[in-house]
Image (cartoon, rainbow, N blue to C red; front, side):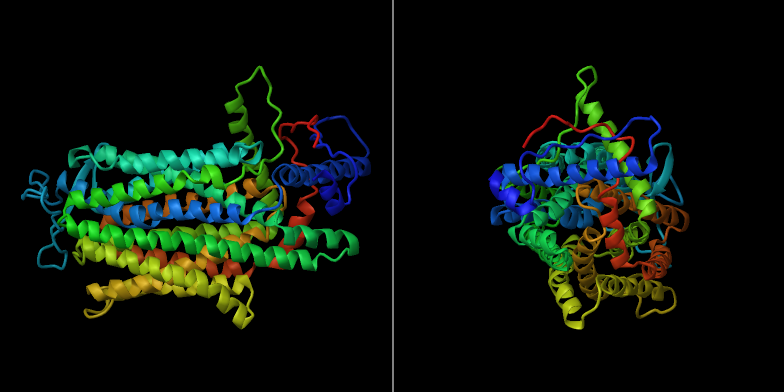
Length: 570
């Protein structure tokens, strides 16, 4: 195997991991630059060589395992978070709430055990609104779920940053993916016995499960460029590049494989979510469409996550990175956490120098926030304003998932057919998605259209699903083209922080607007403006320039990071 790798890389003998330059001694600028380049080239090559020599070429089993992680976890975010958890939190809040106009009158006067009581309409004839007491103040019952998700995203962001260092160094990437997946699955299962009087616990479980999903997603995303880099096709193209100096073949193969595998992962996740949505809909109907039925559905999602998470233990390889030098006199866990935060700040520093990475992340901060909040706001709007029942809302979720699958497969084909760049595809999808909040705004000015009827929710679910599937495929593959080799987990951690961290703002602003106006329709103005703001930002993105900058950063030392092990021979 060593001889095979030597032939592929053109290197003879042993390769050692270069240590980080940390001396403060004054050196000649040219010599220092040359040393930094040499160290990081050795480290980058060693990172690939370490994985390659110990775990071989990427196999079909690994790719299947990578798709299975999405198959296991995606129903949680698509089914539980997007449909059932907001409904359950809103219902629990309503069952513990009081009327806005008189806090002495309970919001619900009937026994809500058998069936969930739909909220009174706010059409002017019966403008009753409900609020619930949370942490010292009254908030709209529809806002309870939004505030919960905002807090969960904050915790998720802190978790992702803290564990990213361990995912980059050593063999912990796989362990973290599996561990957080198991914890998230168990937290989801624990919704089953919760009663409405314990709505705080229901909120806490949502925070735990959503935080774990974010960590799983970061580890899973960081596997993508590493799996692609270790395929036989890319390695052979890399070997040819070293011989003739032409990098076009390697870049083309890498880009095509990233898009292909990313699309497979997105499609498998949405197919899984579709199956879960359909099965859970029958479960809800079979159990009488009660509040307990929603809990049964969430329980089913948790079991699904747990069952399909376990095979990853055998299907995925660790794809270990260079280990971190652990100081025996310090806590190992704290050192990895410290490394994770340091790499984040280094990544921010690098991203600020990589103009196109910074542009992409800034635009994605806005787009991700808008798309995520659209779903939560739409579900709560349909529940509170259109008074749609749980089975109807599950159908909305099924349509979204079905057309997300369609979008994840069709968008890459359309991109290839029309010969447009990933940037153009991304901007087109953003314009497509902006139609949804715009249509909701029309409800202020027209009595017939603008989300006034149930069937409009079904149509917009189709529209939204197509946009969601296209974004899932294009966003990851486009970002993968802009990041330096050897820094995948770090930059995907930054991507996740941007992706999930932005979702703190959207739900919070939506909740504040709802608390202020007690009419969730006003949030469509906010979401429409956000999506429009992303367009001029992405117009400034230059993908080819971003690729060149990423290649340059591959050979820049991460000053300030702890040393990696220097005595590890492969």
